[in-house]
Amino acid sequence: MALVTPIFSVVVATYNRGPLIEATLSSIALQSVEDVEVLIASDGPAAPGLSSTVSHFGDRFRLVETACRSGSQFSPNNHAWSIARGRFIAYLGHDDIWLPGHLAALSDSFTQRPDADFGASGCLYFGPPGSGSASTWVTGLFDPDDRRIPLTHFFPPSSIAHRRDLPDDMRWPDAFQTRRPVDSQFMLTAAQRGCLFTSTRTITVLKFNSALRYLSYLSPDDDEQRAALALIAHPVRLAETMKSAVADAASSGNYMTTLHPSERDRKPGEATRIHARVRGIDTPAIEALDGPTWVPLGDDPRALDWHGLERDTEHSWRWSGPNPRPRLLIPFTHTGPVRVSLHLEAVATADVRDSLSVLVNRRRTPIFVSQSRDAAGTIVGFDATLRSDRPSVLELRMNRTVPAAEFNPGSTDPRRLGLCLTGICLDPT
Image 1 (tube, rainbow, N blue to C red):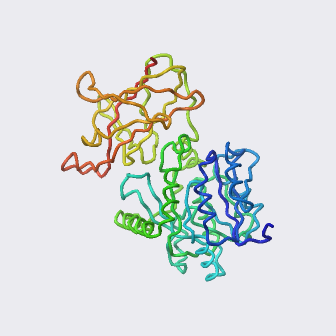
Image 2 (tube, one colour):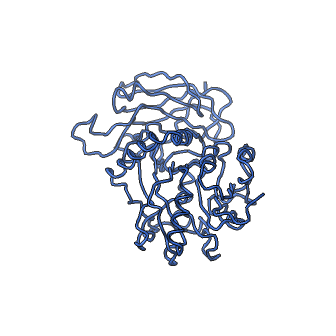
Image 3 (cartoon, helix red, strand yellow):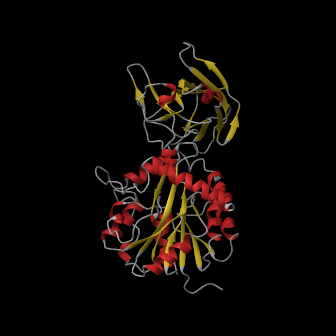
């Protein structure tokens, strides 16, 4: 029998995640607080496999859908809010993980501060595996008596909960009408309206930000989420991992330094559109490949996979990094095999070069390595079968990325680098 007024309504906004949401939902099922309802709110019609995945978790978990896709979490969040029954609404990103005591910690914080409108728990942001200690952040830990913190610091939705009975005009804003990211604007508006925020002062959220993972929606996986879920079953290892991650964040200056982005020089909806391109939600239309073709390197944002485009008078290039598993978008299709040639000007170190492997649409493919005609660079070649319905994704896997000073002594370049790409050639075979 359904609970009349559960303590929490948990809202999980989702789009195109399908069965890969299972690890995230499992982290909800493991919560020590059981007096909850869980609303998995699909932005538009549910992705294949989502309904059966949700039903596996029992009656407390319910799939709801918005009438049409909005392109942002604001619509499914508001829809779930409108039908929620809990005293508090807690959010969880569809690719994030809660530790088992998350909801209990939030409940305790609201009990200690009954006048609070919002609660936030500590959150560990993780960049892609292997991207270095500078790609770890901590947020959500603060003194509840410091009213300035919510006005400046950003807490991701996975770390917050709020009273369900907030005024109707404080619902999630339309992401295409705001100059900031919609989650930042939602929380900042609440703080500016005088809502009281409290903190659990403990880390209970593991966040795997899709905006830091290039093409994460176009070529999704749940490897990190499943690894985190497995770690929860081993408390000692979990504590050691979290202690190390917090130390990384502190040493990199990333401890409680995540601020609300500025809206200056931003157009309404610009942040949402940029994130959609980075995540691979918004991609160019695929073109038929009818002969040898060069894929432009582009200077578009590519999260932590690629540094920006660089050029001199003769050519241009992009270094990969800090992610040692950078991805490339291939917006072409062909009915037969395609020979792909990656032209590299340099690779950071010999061991990085020797560790290189390639996945095409998540499938490993044999590669061959040769010198370019002028012997000034390297060509990595392989055969690929391109998708017919959407762009293909190449994933270049290396054992690590390298601080620039490691292979270029005396360099003041602060970046971690992998390989230097100068061109991508596609040739139907």
